[in-house]
Image 1 (cartoon, rainbow, N blue to C red):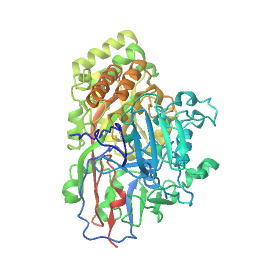
Image 2: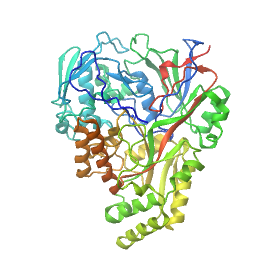
Image 3: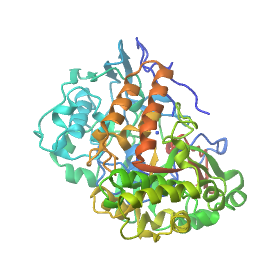
Image 4: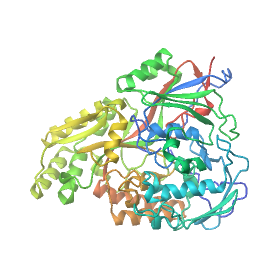
Length: 558
């Protein structure tokens, strides 16, 4: 059950209503597991070796390690440990100040942000207010083509610089540096959940070295977080060591992190069982029925701020227009979600009832239109036949997935169900790894349907709506992979974001979802639990709200 955080104020002297919500690189998930709740590892009494490096499963990042151009988990896991932002999220999803001394507002539209003095980047440069403003302007400017540009959409002046033809030196009018430690942010409208977003990596500061040579920086980022990058060995691993100059609240209790990039979850899990891997956040389907008995108290199975969907581009000839909308609904009706959740996932997934997740405030299981997620053979056939009368279906249905993420089983099951119910050819389209799949998705070269999923970036229901379905996040400006653009949805979303009353905000967010259920820009499948665990080599393993371990807290024996 979600816990309201909207009464919380960030900062020691905040006035007004910096209202917050509990709910999360982002991000499309890499292997199929989403966010988390809070899991207790050992009590930490054994301490551990402060110099020991913790081995964790990962995937090859899709892009260079840029804070505003990473919207997938492989790169996100690394960046969240290399950078510190104004706030961070504790295991329960509650925002806590990290670099922020205070975040103040009188009207939920203009925010004054003061940062703590004394922070530095790992090259010795001080972190100032200008580093935040420069980073945000770079991320927002359309000339830079950043995948996370959507996250700056609410700042005044974003619309003026967000186009691909923007002047590369243009900046947003809503950002102003007041002094070395203070800057102001003016939004285009009141948005009371703005402060809670600021723990997402896209809002991190960037040093001057980034702007001097972004390409080199992407291979060897210079951050200000609890760890620093030692080496990124492509398609193998990323080695992180402790940043000795970090004095923030995420002080590492270990000697570093090693993210090992696996080609399949089976190998990673076997390494965990043998002690070659310390922590895993994705259990292969073959072990979902046994991992809790095999790992005992070291097994993790808890609700997460993540979901699974599949997407079909809005311009796909078979799935556009009136006939396309009917076909999307027919596909959704042809999939027996509870059966797949039980047969394949053994209770670590729950059939979806909305576009968000039960972990976030505002979730509802009774949004009008969500009956389209209920398995109904007769209704599926009826909808498909209605579409055929308008425009005949051509070719076969394919559903693309990454083979390294444990998705083949559910894709095969879904395609079998679609084939049996609708009488069409349906099959999975396997990509060797997550990066390859995402390259075709973001390059808009992928054909047919493709698996998508969302692990929340920050604790808000609107993080499941805006970055994935708003027009501002389409065409490469965010994670709207199907390029869905509906002004009616945009207006409803903006109304929800602008509401300062908690319950009104949730109600309006649910109204926006009613539009999504009519259009189905993506087809919700199930809500994720984080199914993971850890080896006997480590203690103090706590999986957080976003399905990721609290990396800095993990201790490891010598």
